[in-house]
Length: 148
Length: 148
Figure 1 (cartoon, helix red, strand yellow):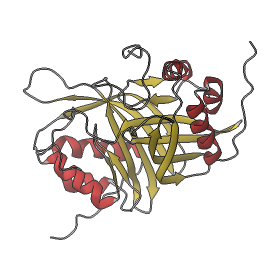
Figure 2 (cartoon, rainbow over the protein chains, first blue to last red; figure 1 turned 180 degrees about the vertical axis):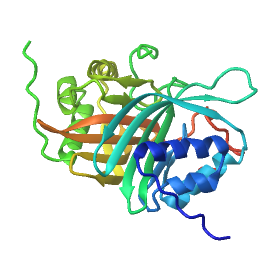
Figure 3 (cartoon, helix red, strand yellow; figure 1 turned 90 degrees about the vertical axis):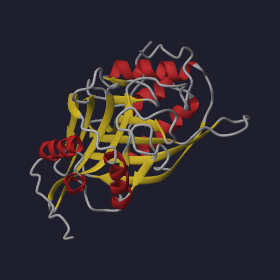
Figure 4 (cartoon, rainbow over the protein chains, first blue to last red; figure 1 turned 135 degrees about the vertical axis):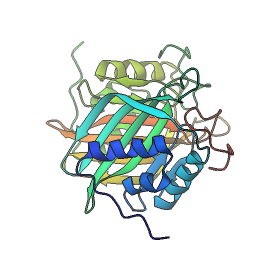
């Protein structure tokens, strides 16, 4: 099967829109067309391990998409840092499944884009739940809920 | 009390070293001297909410440091993106408490530094456990442990 031709994303916002569009449609080829093709790309899914390198990231999305569950993803409360060749977007992902009751907990995501020879590509995606699901593992605050 | 004079960090690596040094020593003033003083700074502690803005970030670290627990933090497996005014470091934090048996689960961290008038400062810190602690909240893979 011929490799899908990389698409061009003239701005970080274009790359981000394509990223979430592919995510919503569980479209692996479209998703990987947004990623920079190098060994330094990093992807952390919520409560998952850190995946490093294009092939590991592809395998991660393959597993994510294997459920075939369609999601609607809206990003809100963006905080952006933009330089000529790197852009960093901190967003909150609001997730819902069409036809299902209720909503998932929001997800905090840090997305890093770089300008490549083929336009802007995503090079890091770090996502984690915005809610406390268990005891903190790094540093125990004196009262578990005081950050809320 | 006079505000602590901001220190200069001539490189992102200097800022990162100061960040983890302050973290190990539970030194709030030293920690906040590394942060960019603006409303767009973002800090996500493991399994915590997204904190936005200098004061919210300060409050978060105040709570983290309230335990007074000394930690040793070693960062490994760094993947770096560097531009003239922005640097992004993806690292794994290896944590231990002196005198205590065992180690905490490693933490994935994405650290973003920007060049300010006062040298390099951290503007985003996103940390999450590298291990699965509960059911994924965003997208259920078919087998929960296949990413490991």
